Amino acid sequence: MILIGNLRSPFVRRAATTMLLYGMDYEHRPLGHTGDDVPELRVQNPVGRVPTLVLDDKRVLIDSAVIL
Image (cartoon, rainbow, N blue to C red; front, top):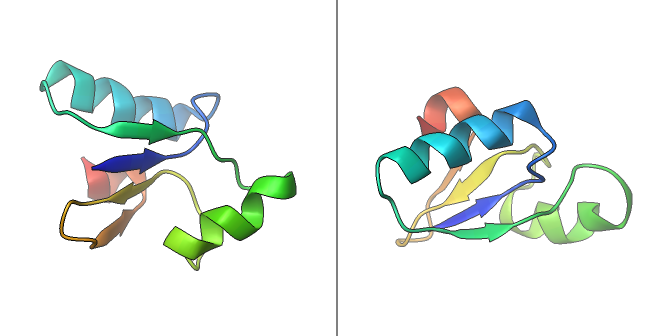
């Protein structure tokens, strides 16, 4: 799994912390939703919101409440 979003965001931290507590392995990509990161973020998530979780089967979850 790949968690996309900068840990400065409380919503990204919420998802990352919960995944860590549950012992879930994931790769972290610290992209933001402003600046030069937007094109790369929109490749995975056309909405451009963080956090974004890309599952192993390539499905994409958007929003920390949905991820949790």
